Structures are given as structure tokens and as C-alpha cells.
Amino acid sequence: MSTVDFSVDTSKPVLVTGATGYVAGWVVKRLLEAGATVHAPVRDPDNAAKVGHLIELANASAGEIKLFKADLLTDGSYDDAMRGCGVVFHTASPFTVNVKDAQKELIDPAKLGTRNVLEAANRTETVTRVVLTSSCAAIYTDAKDTHDGPNGRIDESVWNTSASLHYQPYSYSKTVAEQEAWTIAKAQARWKLVVVNPSLVLGPAVNGAPTSESFNIMRQLGDGSMKSGAPRYSFGAVDVRDLAQAHLAAAFVPDAEGRHIVSAHSTDLLELGLTLQAKYGADYPLPKRALPKWLVWLVGPMVGLPRKTVSRSVGEPWRADNSKGIKALGLTYRPLKVSLEDMFAQMVDTGAFKRV
Image (tube, rainbow, N blue to C red; front, side, top):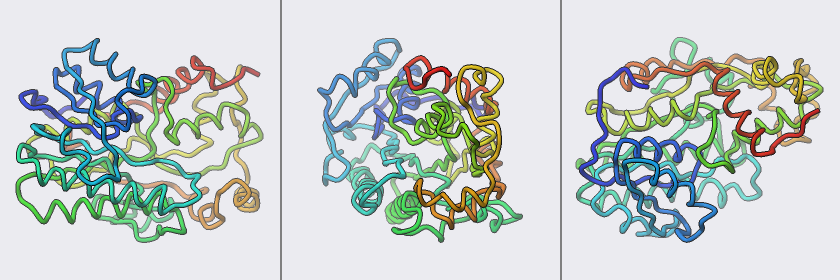
């Protein structure tokens, strides 16, 4: 919910890129519930396995959804879908850490995709606002970086300067994509750019088979991968439903501007497992103890965790100032326990884990 009054403008369609994604699914659901017409550009509008749940959401709501064929890396691909829209939500960007070619799999889709969408906004006279789903990863790389921000925590004035193509390329992709968005936005005066910078997103998906990295993390907690212990790898976390609310506020609160850290909790991998213990610990091999940092440092590279990351994020508190989002967008946040239990329950229902 939001403590700032606003209403969804249903007089013009809204465009949501990446509509089949984890975060976008909830944004689409909320827009449809408000009675909006949602234009959803997707790779294959005829792929029922990918888009069927969006059609079901529309059928159960007051709104309407229209599917369009588009591709992030094709120039002009979004022009048809954007025609007549007032607000554009650009959520489409890959979230994965296991890549073979970071430039091709992360950087290009993030940066060039953002450029394609925003250049389409420049060509579409009806667009008055663009909401970009960026990330706290555009602000920091490792938890220790957050201590260097104003007053010992990151805020919206901080930019990530430590990630690169070769070190934490996902964080680098989010940084260059958001910087590209601001460059394009500042070169024109018709539409306003408002940016949402979430931390790790948790909670259930509207699609029963989500592909976000968040679900891979949860799967490792519940399938026994961390049965012997979990590292105290630190990060922020936010519920996907609260994040969807942040997107709607960013789009329709008249005075919304700039960047917004959207994060409810400072936590770590072990705390996620411990939080789930009360409800699920008897049936699933959740971690109960912390792995020593020296051990994580030793074996980290074998599981894709660079030693630099271990040194700078394990046992280092994650600190962020989330006050702007709370005040400007009227955000309130669910307890971490609610987000985790709802997410875990959905994964149990879809057969992600085996009982011990």
C-alpha cells in the first residue's frame, strides 16, 4: 500500500516491457486491477506458456491487455506497442549471475535495450513519463561499498564505481543502463524519467514458473545446497508486491522525480534460512548455522563467488537510506518473514523442493 494519494490514469494505455518477468508481472497485475489498458511487448505473443498467465490476469480484472511482438535489441521494435501510451514502464533486463559472455548476455540487453525503449519514447508524442526499473546494484557492488556512502550508508546520490565487465558484470549492466537512461532523458523535455532502485526482490510470482535469480537463491536454501551452513553474505531485500506499488507510485504520483532506493530490510543468506525455520525447518534442509568466512573465501571461486566479493560482502552489514522512497512514494513494507514464507510456499506448491 501507499500512504501518498494517487490514482492510476486509465485514459491512455500504459506500456510494460518485460511483462512476463517477475517484477513486471506484479506491475501488470496492479495496473489491470486499476482498470488500465496494458500494452505488453514480448518476444512471441503466440507462446501460451509465456503469456497465458497475463491473459488470465486481464480476464480476472477490470483492465485489458494487448500483446505486441518486440525485441530489446531491435531498433524501432517498441514503436507499435508504445503508440498512444502515456506512461512507459521499462522493467526488461536480465537478472542472472551465471553468464559466459557478460557483454552479450548482460551489458548489451541492459544498455542497448534501455536506449531502444527510451528512443521510442522520444518518437511517441503521447508519452509523458518513463519509469525505469534499475537496481541498488547501480549504486553499489559489495556490501562494504555501502559504508562509504553519506552518513555511512548509500542513498540516491551514490553511483556504483567498482563493478566492471569483468567484476560483478550484472551490477555493471544495471549501472550503465541507468546512466544511459539519464543521458537520454536529460536531452529532451517532454517526458519525465523516474527510477526505482530495488534491492534483492523476494516474494511470490504471478507466474508459477519464474526465472529470476531470486528463485535460484531460494531454491539453494531449500534443496539442501546450504544444509551444512550458509554464508552471512549481506544484501538488502524487498517484497515484489511492495516493489510493484513503488512502480505505480513512481508513475502516477505527480511530484515523483529522480531515483528511489526501494528496500525494506538489511539481511543475509543465513538470516533468510533462519527466518524460514519456524514454518519449514522440520520438512526442508534449511541452513541453521553460519559458514566461517575463511571457509567461504577458500571455496568461493569453486561456486562462482570471487574471493574479493567474499571479503567485501560476507559479514559486512548492508546499509542503505530508504527514506526517500517511503516519503516521496508513500511506501510501506511487509515483514521479511511474510515475503519469505509466501515465496517458499509457492515454490513448495510447484515442486521446487523435496521434503527431508
